Image (cartoon, rainbow, N blue to C red; front, top):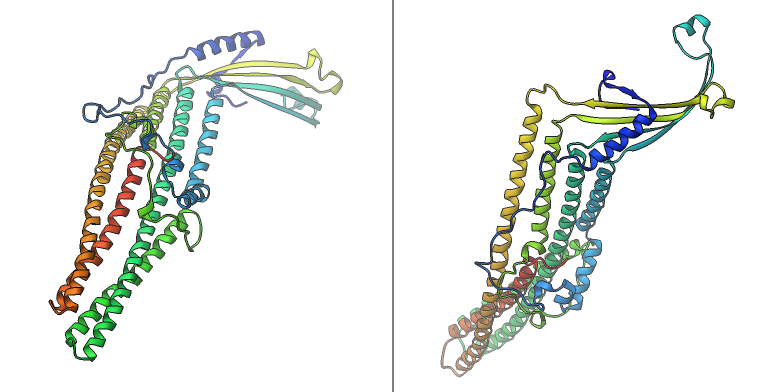
Length: 474
């Protein structure tokens, strides 16, 4: 059995003494000190003075993604992504890995039990036997052994706690990735439906302008309008026609982006509700909820990383203290199978060993200081994550509020532009104005409709960003 320490550090003990020593060791182990200190959670950032508002129970803060998004096609796309996304599957595998590492670290605290056995035959002369060169004849043995490193300074318990914190951090990383995937699917879906709408606007505008070009060309052919009007109409038609392939190209890009998120090759994406028909049932929070620190996966992950690094500092400190291990062997050995299991063949031994650092020229101190420096790093990262989280929520709240107001204004602008174009076309047809006025109103309506569609998509995605920033979606 392999024991820490040099050969001169072994102490053979009677079996009864070994048992007593083990009982004492258990007592010492359970009451051993943590030389690196006891971990305390990072202090929470005080935000109540800035964001005193709390959220209601029906707020999006307390809803799952399947209840937030009402579009059944979008729900199905999200579910397929959660089932098939390769990055998420890898994150789930990392959680399983961390769980097993935690279980292995937990097992190191307790004694390890092993077994062994052997059978052989040797032939040596009488003179060789005098110097203990071996055994003449058969030899049989079977034994069980115990090996235990006493965790007097908490090194093994720090390892266990560090592994547990890493496991919890890996779970939060999975939750964070899941939240990001849900948000990415919803964001790309709303952009795709916006591009669908802008493509429809471009096609509708092109058809109207193409019809207008045919009318003006016919009027030019009969001498009612100048050739300049004809060329201007062709230009306007071309502007709308050129927008069609641009939107078709972007639609293909976002369709493929959604397919990749689902773990699928390029192809078509099914459509559900148009953006103008999307509905969000829950109410919005009036401020940043105080429980944000307990909800956001990135904050929770950063907190667990601080805890894991704190325990690594404890391991480094404990490594500067001596290690004590106990070993016991119990079994039978005999040159004859007939006497193998008798008292004459009993083998019992016990040993204790102590091993500790003496002169390492400051190596262990430097290692400990390096671990403490890493603890400062992850602590600052945690604080930065918290600050970014509150900023993220505040920006998302403001974005949704401002996009909502902007969309309402643009709807009025589109109505006004549509009416202005109708009046300008009537004035032109009756000869009260030239074609330049019609061109201006055509451009105004086309741009206003495209901008209205884009701002609606931005409003919907600001809700997605708000839900994500509040820690929802997992």
